[in-house]
Image (cartoon, rainbow, N blue to C red; front, side, top):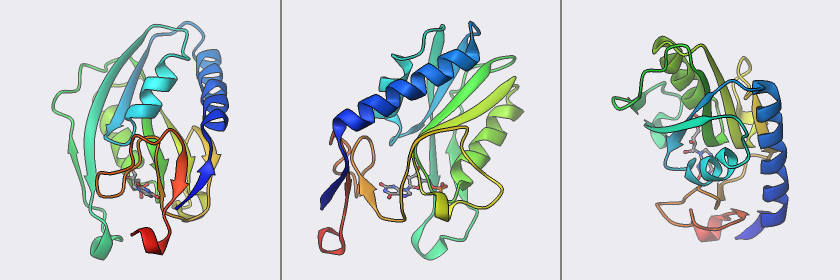
Amino acid sequence: MYKLIDEPEIRRQVAVLGERISGELQDRPLTVVGVLTGSIVLVADVIRQIETPVQVDFVRASSYRGRTTRSRDLTVDAVELPDLSGRDVLLVDDILDTGRTLRALAELLRSRGAASVRTAVLLWKRDRTEADFQPDYFCFAIPDVFVVGYGLDYDGDYRHLPYIAVLEPDDL
Ligand code: XMP
């Protein structure tokens, strides 16, 4: 396991992200929707950088991977979502890989009446993302390696690390 992005660098980029989001929103209120569980650290950090009124909610989404990586199966538990009609929504996740999770969730939030849905991630595995999708905001583009920390886990562990680390085959 080795460190890919250290804590001060993450802090700097999350501050830049918060400034960009605040600048583009001007004074309009925002609903931040985090994707459980990996987004919790970024959501906690980014909402404190936003200067307009913010509401915060979470959805749980699981995509089936491994043998079914190519499958489009995505289970979303969004029953608790508030009324989003007319709200500007920022959908936040830890990492964008193929883009299927955020694409499906963005569609769902639009169908719940959101006025706009933008996406923000800490990490973007740009080379793996399907061609017609990209995040509105990202902090770091990374290569196709398995990363943990800052909300990202391996089998439930490592989410608490304040930095991003790469797990190597020996760690798995
Ligand atoms: P898609 O392909 O839908 O996937 O963009 C996004 C989800 O994939 C998981 N993911 C990872 N999780 N380290 C992780 O801990 C990684 O390197 C990684 N790559 C993808 C993650 O759950 C994310 O929400």
